[in-house]
Image (cartoon, rainbow, N blue to C red; front, side):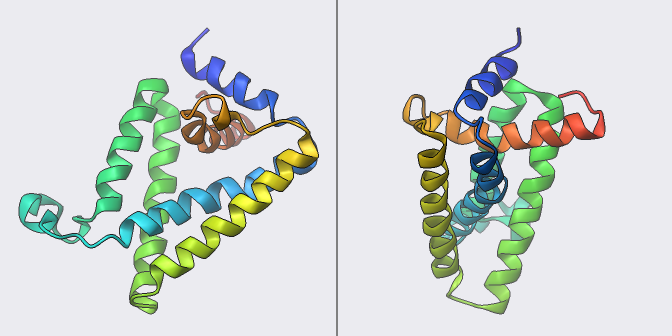
Length: 159
C-alpha cells in the first residue's frame, strides 16, 4: 500500500461523522487559505532581490507553497496537481484581497483562521474523536489532500 493511501485512511478514521465531514469541506480550505494570507502578509524584505526570477510573486507565501507542493510530490503526483491549482487559487484570492483592502489582509486571514479552527474543533466534538494532527503533525498537510482525493474519486481520476 502506498504511503498516501495509509495516510488518507488513517486521517479518515477520525472523520466518519457526516456533520464533521461537511464541516471539514468548508473549514480545511478556509484554514489553508487563511494560512496563505497570513504568510503573504509577512513583509517580503529582501526576497525580490534574492529571487528576481519570481518578479511580482516574490513573497513568503509563494516560497512556503513551493515547499508544501514538494511534500505533496513525495506522496502523489496527481494530488500535487490538484493542490497546485488550489494553492494558485488561494494566492490569487489573497493577492486580490490585499489589493482591495491594503494592510488588512492579516486581520481578514486571522479572523478566518480562528473561526475555521473553532468550527473544526466543534466538528471533532461531534465526531467524538480528537483531530488527527494531535497524533501526528503531518496530518495538517493531509487534510487538504484528503478532500482533494474525494474530488479525484468523484471525477474518476486516480490519485
